[in-house]
Every structure is written in structure tokens, then in C-alpha cells.
Amino acid sequence: MKVTFIGSGNVATHMALALKTAGAHIDQIWSRNIEHAAALATLVGARPVSALSEVDTNAGLLVIAVKDDAIAEVCKALKGVRALVVHTSGATDLHVLSSFENYGVLYPLQTFSKSRPIDFVKVPLFIEAGNGEALNKLKSIASKLSPLIYEATSDQRKILHLSAVFACNFVNHLYALGNQLLEDNGLDFEMLRPLILETAEKVRHDLPLNVQTGPAVRDDQQTILKHMELLEGKPHLQEIYQALSKSIKKTR
Image (cartoon, rainbow, N blue to C red; front, side):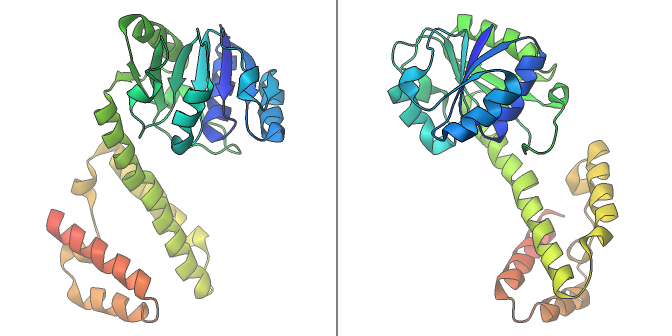
């Protein structure tokens, strides 16, 4: 199967590598920045292009893996496409692709960084398609990447994406805030790693609500007040601390 990628970022990089490993021929990589396209193209043995008019619209699969705000713009620029066209976004509706004959969504629910390898076999893939033929083809493609394949509507996928922002992006930001507090006081983030790993291990086997700990769930007001005092001069952190503590109390 010949595959063209529109995009050269984190998702495009990992998906292109996974498809290549699965036996697909990655033919072209498009990016507005030809150097970015060339970097990924070198990894997967493809041809870099920087103009959408150069994209081979007869490929078996055309993957749009650009930022969400650019998907509609890319769709308008692609003409005469015979390939199955998919986007990889969790937050973007299927119907943004409805100008194409065969189209669908191939959404990998994972956090990707170019510098960190990902085993796609462990990545849940959520699929949706504009018709039965496209869905069957998409299932076949997805099965080459991962056994964890789920059909999800656009509305379901948006909720999945929102949930992932809470569970991943926001949590990682809290790690960053915790690290800044440590650095400000001559301490090292390495001290928190065992705690972070144990928390993640707990939710592998139980629901988060069942393993919640800390002063808010215990309604330990003296500790909460001491923490607020330590955050004097940092009103944005006090606001975050209060909001999360209040949320924990409401859900315990």
C-alpha cells in the first residue's frame, strides 16, 4: 500500500514509522517547511514535498496529520483525490473530510514526542468512516498497527480527546508546576518520580476515584492552610490549588 502523509510532526512521525514497519510504502511527506518534510522522509524512505499541488492523490492512503486548525484548509487545497483520506485528530469532526469520496478518521489515543519511541501495538486506535467500504479498509489498515481498535463517533472521539487533555496534558502541566516549586527551593524533580510512577501504577488496576489520597480527600484543613501560606506571592498557584482541592472534596 502506498501512503502519503500531510504533516511531519509528532503524530505523523510515529504513524509513518509504524506503517513502514507494517509493510506499507511511505511515498510522500508534505510539510510547509521542506526541511521538516525531508527529515521525516529520510526516516521512512519517502519523497519530501512542500506544495500540496505536488501530492500524489492516487495513493492508497492519504493521512492528514496537521494541527486541527489546518485540516479544513488542507482539504480545500486537495483536488481530484482517489485515495482513502483520513485525519488523525481527536477533536475534529469526520465531516470536515466529506468533500472526498472515501474518508475516515484514524485517531491514536496517545501522547507522542519525536524523541521517544512508541510501540504502536499498545496504542488504542479509534476509527470512523464516511461509508462501509472506507470503514472496512480503515479497519484493515488499523489492524496492521494495533490490536486495540475501536469504532467511535465524532462526538465520542471529542469526549475521548477532552478526557485525555485532563488525564495527560493537564497532569503533565501539574508536574511542571511541582518541578518549579522544587527548583525554587533547591530540590530535585527526581525526588517526585517514585510518587508519580506509583500513582500511575495504581490506576492501571483501579479507578482513579478509588485511589485518591492527600489532604483534600481527608479534609485536612490545617495542611491545606499551610500549603496556601507556602504559596503566598504565587496567586495563580493558589487558585489552582484551591480549585483542585475543591473538586476533590466534591467527588470523594
